[in-house]
Image (tube, rainbow, N blue to C red; front, side, top):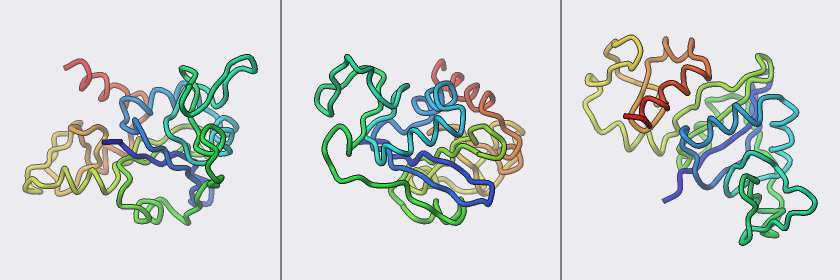
Length: 186
């Protein structure tokens, strides 16, 4: 089963523009690529121009001498539905707010937004598909990964690690990567 995500920009007015990414949308895969290879508004805009993608890579395009297609992929190159599979172009979707973006599609597992005003990636936002799956426990059982506070709602960073809204608002991409590294390395 694919881990679906939306990747895009949080504009200074609070609106968003995002594209769909079908595979490998979990933070352990997406976040290092986004923070290391798409760390400017210009790089994110370059990614958005591809339209919807199958999988995110470190580069948006192959080198001129490289043969790249949906079936014959170049390692590290983003696979785009329009360019690499010949499907109709799907432009980035616009939403008036992060809440409107999250409410627009219940099948998305993760949302990744580059804050154009701050010039950095926001921590990943868990989509409703994973929230429905993870919220089977008694809500009183939720404990923030950072402060240890019991809470009725967590913002999920990985499939198993969540934080309260107070801690989430203070997190940096480096802190998120630390959580991911801890989970990956046991």
